[in-house]
Image (cartoon, rainbow, N blue to C red; front, side):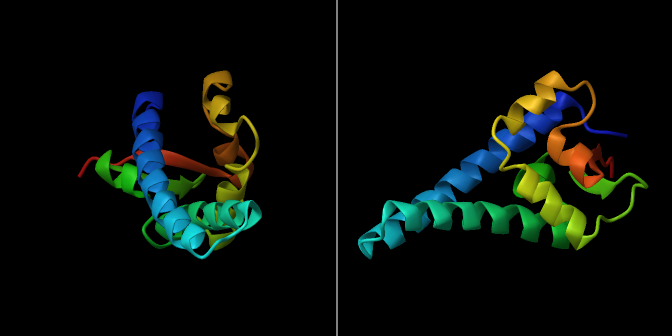
Amino acid sequence: MEASKTRRLINWLIDDVVILLALAMVVRLISDAEATQWQLRLASLGALFLYYVSGEFFFQRSLGKLLTRTIVVNKRDERPSLTAIVLRTVCRFIPLEPLSMLLNTKYAWHDRLSGTKVVFINY
């Protein structure tokens, strides 16, 4: 069963808090080394990319999805390929992409473009 928009919003909020905390630590470490603004932005994008790709490829979920009992699958309800997960993550960098959940009735852009979806697992 596909995850509801409410459950997906909770996923996003949890993941954002985790990412912001991780980024705060990265910025703290890098800024102590007198990094430029450009280096801080690249480190932030890299941390965000690694968070989603590693979690969703190896475990089919991020921390937010773990807590809401959802996983990422492809359109055939199978484990997505690394290519699909990377594309899904890259699509998260599209400006205004979070609004796609509000504008689209079924799938966010990062789901539609990567051929994935988020489903609720009742175990």
